[in-house]
Length: 157
Length: 307
Image (tube, rainbow over all chains, first blue to last red; front, side, top):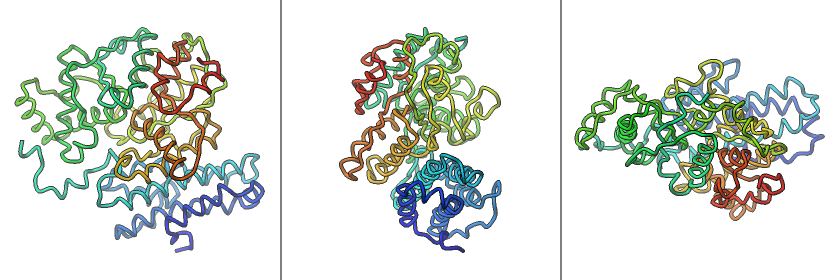
């Protein structure tokens, strides 16, 4: 497990903030490494979710990326987690964009957008973890309270 | 081209009578301008939103099924719901009634008690306002009606998380050419581009706005919304176009809260896509309810010559 994979979500947020504020020259010079770092931060966020739920995080890959496999694993049985499905895919997409052409004229902008996407993932998963037990985070989710209810309204009506 | 969507049953839902009234007003105004008829479902009820669903999803299924039943009784084959939450719940009810015997039993029992016909799946099609305009008028038809192009207006199209999720309740999406995509929705982009707007490539178009926690955990919602706003600005957007009253209200309110609580001011404006389309077709900002928005877009609208 590398350093990024053990990053707490707060540290991921701090790192994305630093990337967004960094000068163009620094981002341009370190583009390839930052691309990998974005992916690692995304994985770290998803690992935080799995760790909090005592899941054994998968080592497998989906479409060549462990991050997508980690997301799929997290969404299994928790449909509301799919609300970050495209956010995860956008992290991977921005990683690929940066990796594909580290010398692109707009590489600093692409990196900042990738960091913003990673930040959204961290905010979403972090918020979801904070609110665990308090109720559903997402309208599409399976009712958390449903399992706790002794009886449901439809049975009594 | 209007075809089967020329006249549809209209289900505004609770939000469009309250915080999302500008969406109601602009949807009706755009429909009128396009020659499309909306007939409101008589005595409609709440779709069950998230509150009822979180307590008992089968009750939510019944509530949505009742609306579909009324639409059927009124003689309609199609219900148009502009609100993502209503749209999602009607679709989910359709799916659950088709697939789940328990849902059918509850729906049948409650319909009998309430004294109306039990809705059977497959009788009424639910569409979103985006489907309605895209499939009844289309980009070409829309472009022909544009008198006040949105040219020069940079738009981030924000669909929110309920328009495309979960995928299995939207069998018509991801269905080849001309269909909507659940991973990269584009109907709003297509319509606004036809009206002259310059769409920016917005990477968070389906990301969560934290709407469900707007009241219970304001800070989470504010941080998520702030990130949506700053990312839109980083993409160069003047405006975030919305198609969901919950997302829209969340973006507007948390834009203010982000400034007050987090000290982060953002200037991107928030408008319903129907407001933008209406103005592009020559309707006044007041007719499409811009004055009812919390986000003051009038200076931008004047600058762009839209009102």
